[in-house]
Image (cartoon, rainbow, N blue to C red; front, side, top):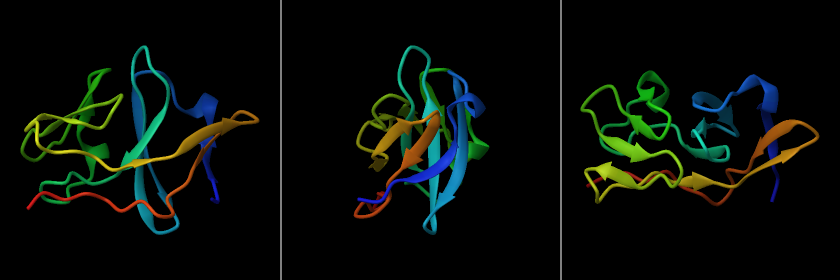
Length: 110
């Protein structure tokens, strides 16, 4: 596995999200309130809208287009509950957030 640095840990605060491109994939890095940083596919599985254009209320990611919501700690769909965000491995090393996208494909609703 090849982890790639996306930002310094100090660049992302608890309760924030930011999008990065990693090896051609749009990755949404989220730091949920009371949790650890996570990395998910950057597009909503509904209609491929960039999730960074939505909002994070601390624990829930909301897509701007049709208000689909996802648990920021797990990527599991809240509304609708049958949806899911693909999750990328992430680690913190020497103060940097690193993400691995190899072998993980974004999920889309049928």
